[in-house]
Length: 425
Image 1 (cartoon, rainbow, N blue to C red):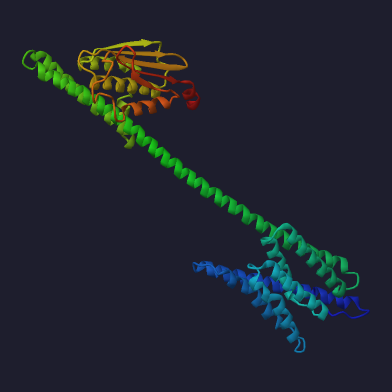
Image 2: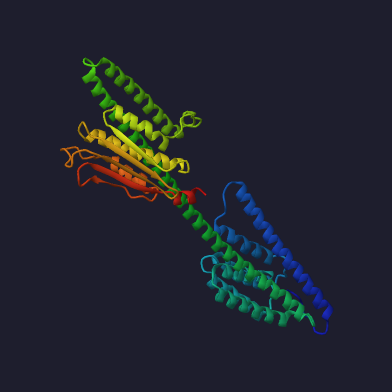
């Protein structure tokens, strides 16, 4: 597939002609690549990319222009016709790579039969590269075998004496390079497709995780606000009723109840600022007021006693090893259970809270002495018990809430600490 004039009995002119033809082919390929690069670079600088058909038409156009130069007039029609047969099918190489390769190979075989050498033979390598980039392994091997067979025929006909092996080795290396580059392009394209799909999948997963995190945080804040508002308002209502009944008979008790109402309101505001402070950047109130825990259950029991619900607290075991989040869960469970007792049981009901801490778990048991059959409309409803179940489930616990056989109501759960330690570690 090189251009040389073979003269019988003269090897030196043939070698010189072959070298000159190789230089011409290299220059033609260089001009082709440079022209395509300049056109593509100019298109990118203008802010757009050439369509695939326009990009594929550059090489055929340059090959046709090159075929019209450096030819004698008798050879020009055949050279232009064969160049067109070799180059024009490349316009459709992306759509039908195998068909285009077959057409280019057939044109190259006709060129070999006509004993005409053309730089446009580079179209065969371009077609092979396209087959390797867009087809499977076996089709690529078959196309490479066809090109190798054509290279062998061309070298047998046009190689100078003693130059068959070097020339065939050079053409074979070019064929292998074209095939390998095509395979690499196909592999890279497949890899990029997989990477893009994985990135899109990871982005969807991150969006889902973000939505789940937002929903979980919203549910947590909702539970905190429910517990804070319900408990403190219930206590304030009970204290207000007690102050109204005692304002004439015992002004001192009424004054104490009013002061307790004020203190409960301030505590409610503090709890709300602490719970909502995490939503504001630089909010110092959450740091000044630590989260309530097991140590604050004594104050909670005293508050319930002042509101009219005698409460007995029994703490078993040390709680210093219990994480702060678990202590907050215990506090909210006890607070919600006592609030329900205060709201839904008649006067004279007594409550008992028992919290047992161990190295593995924390057990919470809240009972009251209310009537066995609840009054109409006195069954706890809303988000209280479901919120308690969610808090317990976060530590692998199952909350049981229901009437006792001998009367009264019980709320019991067990919070595991093992999973929490492992997660924090």
